[in-house]
Amino acid sequence: MSTNENSNNPDVVLIGAGIMSATLGVLLKQLQPDLTIEIFETLDVAAAESSDAWNNAGTGHSAFCELNYTPELEDGSIDTSKAVKIAESFEVSKQFWAYLIQQNFITVPPSFIRPIPHMSFVWGEKNVEYLRKRYEALTSCHLFKGMKYTEDKSQLEEWIPLVMEGRDPEEKVAATRMDIGTDVNFGSLTRCMFDHLKKQPGVSLHFSHQVRDLEKDEGETMWRINVKNTVTGQRRKLQAKFVFIGAGGGSLPLLIKSEIPEGKGFGGFPVSGQWLRCTNPEVIAKHNAKVYGKASVGAPPMSVPHLDTRMIEGKRELLFGPYAGFSTKFLKHGSYMDLPMSIKLGNIGPMLSAGIKNIPLTKYLIDQVRQSPEDRLDALREYLPAARLEDWEIEIAGQRVQVIKKDEKEGGVLEFGTEVVSSADGTIAALLGASPGASTAVSIMLDLLKRCFKDKAGTAEWQSKLKKMIPSYGQSLASNGKLCAEVRRQTSEVLKLQFAEGVLEEIHQ
Image 1 (cartoon, rainbow, N blue to C red):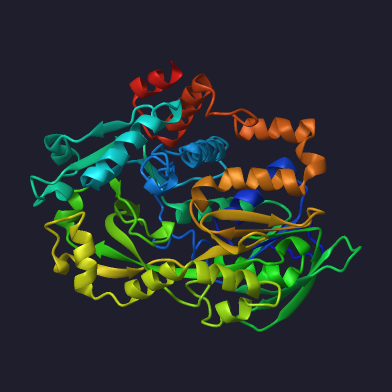
Image 2 (cartoon, rainbow, N blue to C red):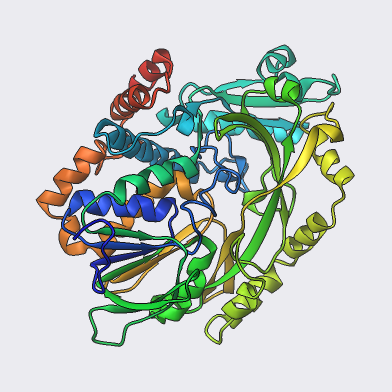
């Protein structure tokens, strides 16, 4: 079967041309080269929604600086479990990307991934005490060795001069810094992976094609899928043994249409966003870090404010935000009818229950939507006291759909994170949710393989191939400092991250 040849009975259908589908597609073709795969994307280019550099947080989430991953418990201790899991997952992703480069499967631009310090910055006695405890808790795990902590203003002026410029000298401040942080352009990476995939025998990639419906009657082994070419209007029907719905905010409507029991009760709450984008090259040149703070009370995790240096399309950019907002669209290029059309008898109860419990979130989003340019500038000045409105302009960010799921005790709960929903027979899976998403895509897809390809995932053949792609596969980087050091050394060489040898030796010990 040639690259561009269509089959009405492919083994696998991937819906959505984002980082998740790209990762799963490449993994499957490496594990079983004779698989036939068809990929359908509504837009005319890959990675134009959640995976795009302007649309996602793009930090290379490794939990070094994101304070919402390390909540303070009622007893005053810091829960680091989520941060450790995310940090470990990001190391898994880097191993997979390094493998693709070593095998010459992808040729990525130098700006795909590059080292940049990840920092957390707080002010006020209470927040400083929290950050100090967070630092102590995280550095007890070797994944976070090399993290620096300071309350010294002269040190902070060296690290983040823009953030300290014009700040009250009496204000109590503190920061942590990880020099091995990264900036990742997931849009660039995704398109490189699809460039590789579409050259493989048995793979077809279709842009401007929308999956309109999918169904499988009880006892059947194949999913029946209806696809529409949005340019010509032509419709096509096909059948597939396995379907992955990786369409970002568009996953929920298709999961509902699948009518699998595991998808009952799921709903979605859309959250939009905006950045302030710096337009002054002199200001951009003065900042070189990703600086995260604490979210406002009632803010969703995706709205954790950060002053973020990025490389996008070969150009250095400086963003602040994101400012949250509300739209009934599930995708940036979606329809205002997405939310109302997603409400069904099976999920209206959980959605109403979650809505009642999250009235403060609704109020917060309404307040964000009503913000004036001056209001946004006030928020920016908490991080950049000397900021001027004329140096910044609005940039529309991506659309996120937070998961609402049925809960026997609560009725319905709003989840902030990613969730894979799969059928009992393993013939279909959907990825719902948002952050940390892209950074942990490889770990998420490895978990999906165990769920949906049970008969093959445990075989010696697949296990051997997985360990070749991901040297730490089957082992815990969180509990094995020596392995963690070896993995970081190897991936840093391939990805040209130039991590400090001293930090690696410290981890090793």
